[in-house]
Length: 267
Length: 304
Image (cartoon, rainbow over all chains, first blue to last red; front, top):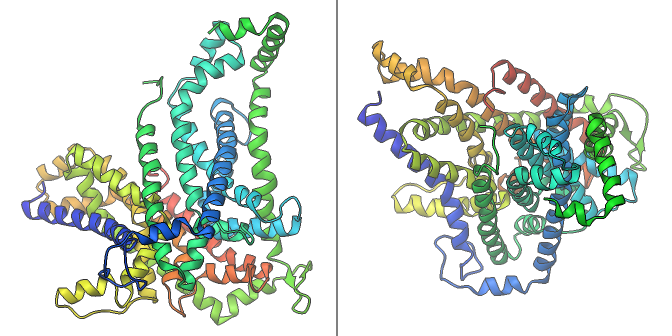
């Protein structure tokens, strides 16, 4: 149905869109090797010296450590709460079920500033135990990480039959054994891919974090601050390039895992 | 399978057995145990915080003590809707969000069509991953990249110069915000549109050709109407995400490029006027609520 001209046109368009998507990413990676302090194009010379100086920057190390901790805790909480919620919603009939899945999705649907602002004024009013720091950052991140796990697990549960668990119980397994040998293997890849995505999301989050971090700096907050003030830009370039390289790996893995079907499927 | 149960010892095993039988017979008990932790987390922290926030929009801040005064009034909303500055900022935010949505729709449609209809299966899988990956590659990094590209000595002007074209200075302006937002959210538009076009059965297009429709007629009468729910679904993301952002305006916008989010942020932080910030944040909430109702009418939720 498509003429030769439209086909060539669409090919070109697709190539341009891919170029548009990746040129900025490529450029930012090139800047990490910029010899000069001045960020102009093309870069003046090639150097890896900024990598060493960034590695020895204590601020960057602290921020990185805080980001990793926050992402780990938030992902851990989300794994427990998200899969519990997914099981409840998919395996049980109860009043208000639709409302509950709506509530879980809310932190993704609402703009980040609203989540951030709400949590901020809540923490300020409540005071202890919500003094700003790692704990409040983790709570803020957990709100939207739960959704990721919830969505992943519920999709997997919908595509597997509940009769597997029933069969296991009929054959004499108790609740724990059924979970350990039947349910868990079925959802395990969904959990791993969800956890990778939740981790990546938390590690990258800025908006909610600006409201919940207090005086602490996560890595994105450090980057944001430095860009805004125009300080230490060579090191910002390095951090940003490394982050891009590092986030692409877990996401690629998550993508592959969610395509693998788990052990048992209904089809 | 049996090792765990046998080595646990008889009495303990029996107790566990009984416990699990109780849970099995009383399904609601299991359901309840599963539901309580996530509901407690969301109810006590998240929903609690949201409700307190919305209520506080009806309070005011004493200008002298900067303490929140708990008397009910609509002063904040009056300021939001009558003060020209705030109106301008709201209109700018909504206007740029709309412009970004339209731009992304125009860019995504031909691309999604190519992906779904012309690309080979391998090519399609590759393009899918290529579209998906930037979504996860650090948001800040991608905004920052554009700050460098658009700078006077940046890659854009260098390219223009080498092509023999006049250079442009759009860094730190509304144009820059439009461009960067369109870039950042583009994958959110491509994916649902692609999903919608992919679902169109080949026979529809063949039937259209058999009935004598030329390429453009088929596009207009078959592809566009069927891709429309996908477009609306994608627009929810591009529109909502732009509406609530304040990082991009801070980094690539100019002095007069404030967004609703910037005002909200400075009122929570520096100005310490949470009630006003809450009232102003109701604007994007209302806009999104209306948008979602319309989107639902247009069938966007089946396309998600």
